[in-house]
Image (cartoon, rainbow, N blue to C red; front, side, top):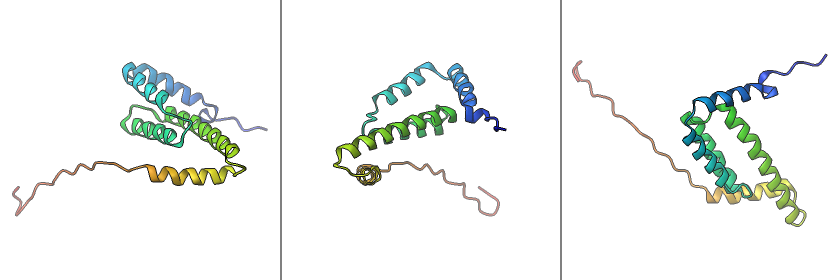
Length: 130
C-alpha cells in the first residue's frame, strides 16, 4: 500500500501559503521582489547567488514566506543544473562536477560578505543605581 503524501510533499501547503501571502502582502513589495528576480541573470552563477541572497533577505525580513522561498529554491536549482550542463558541454568534455568546482572557486573570489551588527550598550548599574 502506497503511503499518502503529506500536504508539504504534494505542494498543497505551499500553494495555500502562497495564496495567503498574496492576500496580505503589499502588491508594490511583491512587484519589487518580482522585478529583482526577473532582473537576476540566472545564466551566471553570480545571478543565482544574487537571487539566493534576495530570497534569504526576504525570508528573514518576513517579506517572503518559507513556502515561496522553498519554491524559488527549486527553480534556482534547476537553473544551476542547466547552467552546469551547458558549461560542461562547452568546456571540452569537463564533467559537471569539475565545472561546478571551478565556478564555485570563481564565485568565491567575486563575493564579498557585508553585514552590520547593531549593539546597544547595557546601562551601567553600580550599587543598585543606574
